[in-house]
Amino acid sequence: MEKRNKPYIQHEEPGLKKYCACSLSRNLPYCDGSHHGTGMHSYKVEIETAKTVAICGCGSSKNKPFCDGSHELLQET
Image 1: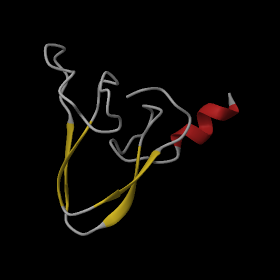
Image 2: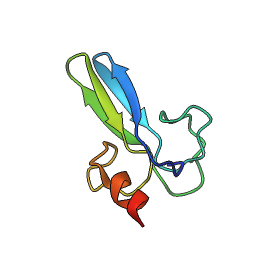
Image 3: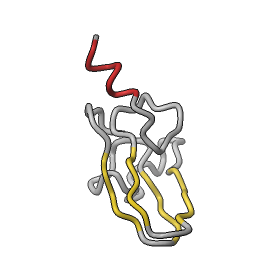
């Protein structure tokens, strides 16, 4: 995804969500299909109940597509 030092905070309704994994999307954090031909795939997540989620923006989360706070460590270096 686009390298940024904070997550994308999104309120999501139930349903299948496709989050960008390549940073080429013009609709971040969502996938718009720009990855086609790169060998990459979107992160597909089934949201079961309406909730607010934090989607990784720095690319360093170990829980992608969700933020795990790794961007805080990047800011320290």
